[in-house]
Image 1 (cartoon, one colour):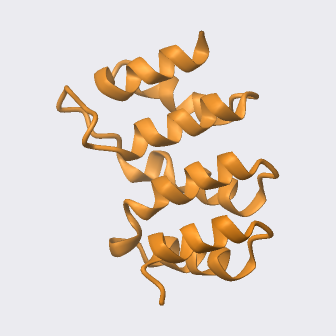
Image 2 (tube, one colour; image 1 turned 180 degrees about the vertical axis):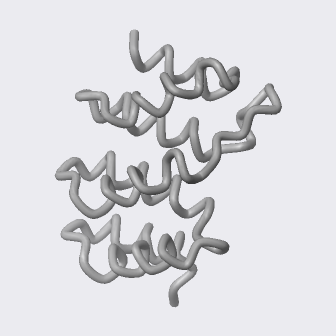
Length: 118
């Protein structure tokens, strides 16, 4: 149910529902959290004019990238952060670090592509 709610927020988020979407970044289910990352980062899916400000989700996405054990959730963080890496040096640096250090070879490659490194 929580995944479905976040999926709906992806398309219909507005200023009133935005706090709930940000709270989903701390959900105990990694799939809910991953979907919330996508919803916060992806402008293509939005039907409304609401575009969540990066300061609301980038710090949490960086934390998930660096510290979460679940590789699917780290992949979601890489994907979301890749959308802002070109204009956020700290994000590009974190993705470059993940490209060098993540324990998962596939995620290292994904991070390298999103960071626009080599």
